[in-house]
Length: 173
Image 1: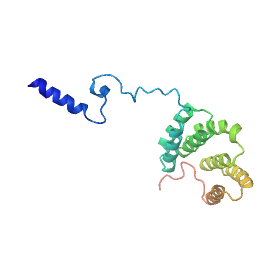
Image 2: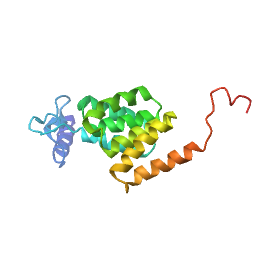
Image 3: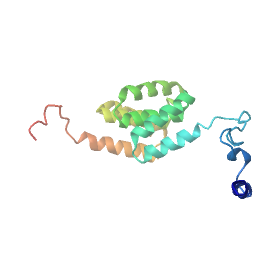
Image 4: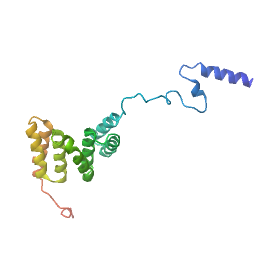
């Protein structure tokens, strides 16, 4: 009786549409996992960039920082990954990392609006308002109708109105 039950189970499993012989064994890879990928034309590093940009837009700067760093491990000179890495590092106040990225970006896209706006915003976050204004004005000269540049100049204008306080001046509040 046992051989008959085993035969019925085996036939019922074999009649399923999506079951291959490799899945019925206890070892061995399925054909999909052993697929030859040598004919692929690129490494899918864009997946990391897309995910990192989504995380950045959601405000998950720690996750975007790690993802942009992973993208830089694949392609170290990618301007999009460097720019995102720098912006994420700025938002986390890791200015040593963002300085590295901006130094790497300067010879590649140093005169572009994206670089000028991002580096100016980095200076704004650090409290270096004069340097931030210099970079924002350079971006404005390149494209006066750029909404990001206009927004950054407005942020700078609003930042001037707030007083700077030292670390010890807020004690007792």
